[in-house]
Image 1 (cartoon, one colour):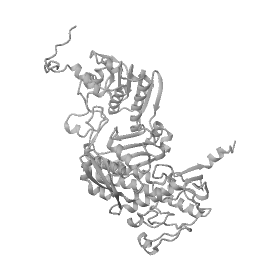
Image 2 (cartoon, rainbow, N blue to C red; image 1 turned 45 degrees about the vertical axis):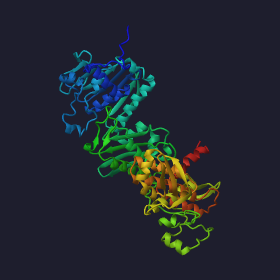
Image 3 (cartoon, helix red, strand yellow; image 1 turned 90 degrees about the vertical axis):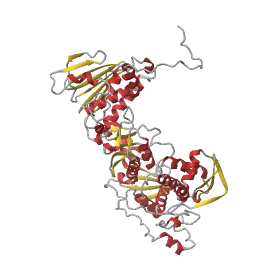
Image 4 (cartoon, rainbow, N blue to C red; image 1 turned 30 degrees about the horizontal axis):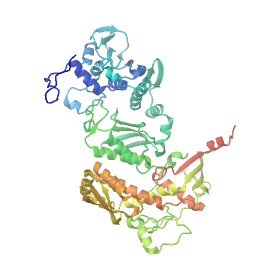
Length: 607
């Protein structure tokens, strides 16, 4: 066999332009729609749901590579339309551009069955409501034959990628492919608790979810652990309706495998939504930990474009900013309620405005920002602390004082209980109606101070800046330099001054005074990255929170500081009134509950 001739220039000879065959076109389309068996499962599930199914059964062999059979009890397909169902771009779900722009069904492209049939053996058995019996069609031959089944449709897909063996080599083990198929069903099961789902693998029942209320379906699919470590979310912002559950920060994971987002009932992966949700966790989640959440977002169909990706897993929003803000605020509000609201056995606990408990004087040696932003003075005065140098000025800056909190009586019920003792100079031990409460006093006070500083800074013009004696140059990308020039005023609000020294060098000339010992260059680069990707107001807020977090950490009560019972109770009461009091600014928990039952178990009581 001789090699094809090579042109004098070394390039391959020009080929004439020609139309591709229908078979090759279908195989190319299949490459966009079908990546693995789970892709087939997802497309078949969409069709079953659109057909009005109430029961769906999925049968897999060898992870779906050998065989995929999906059975539903939906409306079925009339015999005259079975051959059309297998043709490219044939669908009953849209008929005009207006309907495409207001899609309310799971499927609408009309190419899934055709694409699957191009790379596998496919047969469809279906019986419409008014048909005397079912009809079966073979996708290869187009032959129709009578069949027996009740109203509904069965789609059988055998030997996936048999006609494209190179694609089959990229599949993983049967166990891995089955796991992806099962996850595809789980995603639909979460969104449709009104439908029963059963999954069989190699003749064994692998999962079965019966009809249930949404809360029970979430517990059945995601488990008790997810539900118990999460809070309900229910909010409306403008034209965006959000429901679901948000995991507590200490239930975070190393992966994003428990982040479920649905837009008008469709499971999606969207960077905008993910960023909005992650931003809500920014001051309660540390490092690369990933939050967990289940979000159902309802929005007018004409405000979201679902026709941007062949697999329909990506969408585009007309007003991305509105949606980002809606997600962020909804998740923040769900996290803001202190955990005692759930822990107490005496009904929900309604938090009041954030309280203040600061053992450190608001002077330059402590939280020097206090007087500048006009936050309230501490509500509990340490008996051993000296008075400020200028009590009159301090009182004027701080506003009215609040009375000293009293120690609760024995018959009173507090969510975090009554302080009993201090352990190791680090922990506060308290008793509530459920048992023993253990509080990390530094982490807890850090959150209280941090939330106070955030509230105070909300009305301030800018963060105080500290000029550097020697400018700190650093290598910068063209994007960073352009962002620094465009957002110079925004950077000034944050106490950051940057000037270009060369086409690839920026110089840091001032940074926030509160970060005198911090890495100003790292902070500046982080802010530039935020400004380049998101709007200025979001970048400003995130940078402010980072600065205040550092200040709160330095201003919080330190370990080995001996506290009186009155001081301990004051901190417990302020925790109950402070938003997000369950975690410190670095994502660590501030308190834990040991119930009487758990204590009895430890000591083998009742055995």
